[in-house]
Image (cartoon, rainbow, N blue to C red; front, side, top):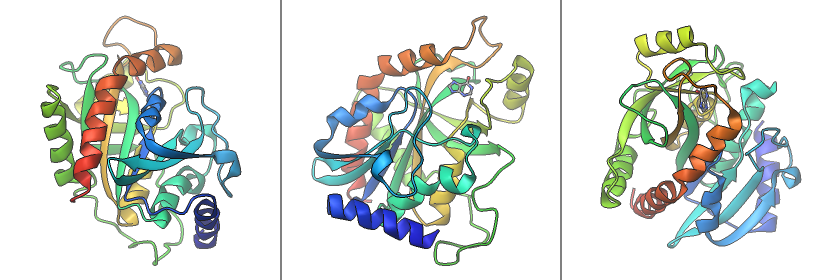
Length: 273
Ligand code: HPA
């Protein structure tokens, strides 16, 4: 694993010498954020050693290196999911690569179904914590001590300081951002209404099929993590509508400007964290 990461990082440094401080993983429908990046260098996942191609529609599969107001960023447009049948090592390879490139702060974004009835479609929610219901963990197997501890602490998996910055930036843009607990499930089916009721009872405010593996791998390797969910739909059974991936992408697009503004301001403030 270590050698693979070093090879992939070396390749990227050859294409574009870089030392990004902030990494961002863009979820379904949120890819348009990359248009806001200054001096972008775009590298296709196909050209990065040991990367898989993304198979999900709405996920492009590109690494974008660039800047936001002087802060170097590395953006992953498109991610890998467990439901694609990939081993966890492959799902979190891009996250670990960001750390190998020097990223200290990781922003995870996703599309999620709202469970909390105070949420509505189109809401942007700061991830306060997660519940791993994937019955998997990227750290299963021999621990690579150089990467991190055998039993990582997850008490502050979503860094409180970063969450405060995100909420503050949202307020500055006149947006009252809520917080919530993200339940990570395996997918690829959306949940049944009974599952959604169960998730609400165990304390989840929103549900999705990503983010948890990356958050775990990033905490293990010592990155500070924060996350934003875009509530693209109310989860199954809460409203009487059929869930469709195309609809989810459309909903994410509608809040793109607000999402981009909050994220851009937050990245600028991460400079001093
Ligand atoms: N469930 C799981 N994942 C999702 C959903 C959902 O309702 N919406 C967007 N991603």
